[in-house]
Image 1: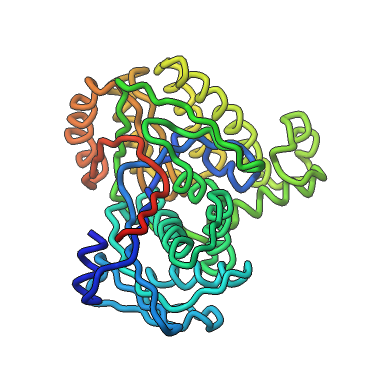
Image 2: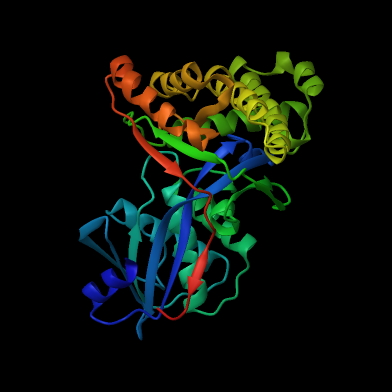
Length: 379
């Protein structure tokens, strides 16, 4: 993987490696940047980074996914975007570190990832956290997990231009195998919620031509912030439905609907976590169904392709499947939880119906809940 790529390109062995996972969010969408609660789990898909320190200040990066592209820049330079989109994330991480007082020097980097890109599974956070883990190890900074997650978020907010919350970076750092994490995005406290061993996580990639539309994402965050101003509160975490109703006349329709989604979603996260602990699939299914409907009608981020996948799953398995769109929206993937014995029936239903209804072909992944950031100093 990354070690082989490193040897092929740089001609020597790396001094260390780091890897971090993509994630799927079971429920809790757009609550993270509102200081709310989320319930993601890591997946077995990972981004791997192999590294070796240099004697100069040059940072050189290569990627398996872009074999003809190499990025070079000086560690001491101010942030300048690359003309290679993937390399912008590396430059953004270095800039975020330097803004927090961490002095980077020269290093060679080789990246290898099997996290599906552009599918709402957070390939960017996997890259950010793996890279931060590598640099943290290479330069002996001893940065803790919560700070690593914050640095990853800072890189996106300040340099990439996406005003994401901290969920993706936090789960990629702290995930535990076989479990989701109930994350408090205000305190950054996390508690493990075991996913029943007889259940499977199934990702249905719509293959709708999606990009994370930063302007739309950021506009929804601005709507939430406007609702907070109207209610004179620091974040929607501090709001309740009575406060929101009392301020209805001060808000646009969009601002009201966005805030209403967040308030309902926070409660759905807690209810889903409790149902998971009881292995109550029907209760989890009800919460995810409510969450998907809210994403469609209040946050307005679903598309016909993902709505169709959810409808196919529910028509086939009823309350034996929990299904909703996951990720940043405007396409991407649907997450399903079902008993492993029902997976073949679910996949068959998608194959029979999805292309007929949409003209698209879904890509499916049967997944396991994976581990968070892992670092190896021995190459």
